Length: 121
Image (cartoon, rainbow, N blue to C red; front, side, top):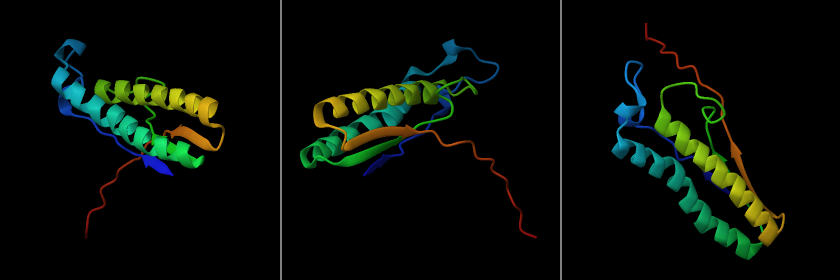
């Protein structure tokens, strides 16, 4: 089993409320895409090849609730996670067609976490 949980964002790949898309840092956007997309593709290729050789396995890619609907200003995270989900769908179909149904490729999108700071008394 492989669980790909690569994920993150950078300030320059986020559009502040008073900024526009044209203020996006392409350098930060690329770094976020490399982390979220390539950070899933590369391990999937390495472990997927091994799974194909042994005719068994499961790949689970961690996506984001930001994929189906734009909910915040984190454009770098959204777009790279959406690309990762598309890669997941493509790999699932390709693996099934070429290697059978003993290898599964899926994505999960965890819900939101509310972080509460609890102070010490």
